[in-house]
Image (tube, rainbow, N blue to C red):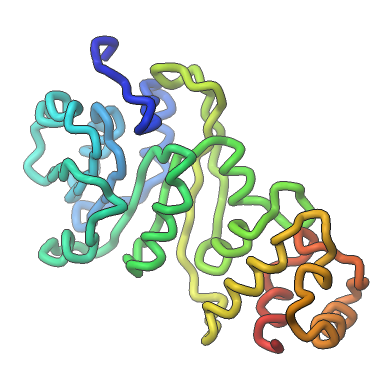
Length: 259
């Protein structure tokens, strides 16, 4: 693999630790009736491990230089599209594939982690699970709980759609070339716990709530009816000086609904 020309613009750091690869696969419960979408297979180290499930695999790889590696994987149910996942119509790509459950897996560069998850949400792909390797700092932010400094707008937004669990951390030494930071494996499981008719309103409210981290929730929501917000905060024994990072998603939903 050392002869491969790694491209910084794609954030290429390929996982080559066999123990970690096995650990990722062992966290999946895929059957031969399912479909796996793999985002960014690179030279196919994880792809080859996924073959054990005998499922259909659709991989999206933006770097055409990986072709010589991926084409060497002899598996009739593997389809590789040398294309940008973010620019594809995924529903159209999979409409003729018969499967029971959809799993989406990938090693995501930090700068496209949120856009990729947003795309999966917007296309309503109805995956049973998402298993993503992301920078540890990103994983801590996405899986944070109220009161933690990492808890942010994106945390609350994703909690609206998914139960998020950090499975385990991965040392930077497990990659080639070695990146500057460690990574983590996240499992995102869709839920229908928070069905809210005015979804756009909710997203706008939480975006405003976290706009200025040092400001209180009431100051960030100065363009809304502050008395309504105060009433809900008082109901749950929060003071007027509470900040957004201290509140669980249920409070934001109630505030959004009341506004």
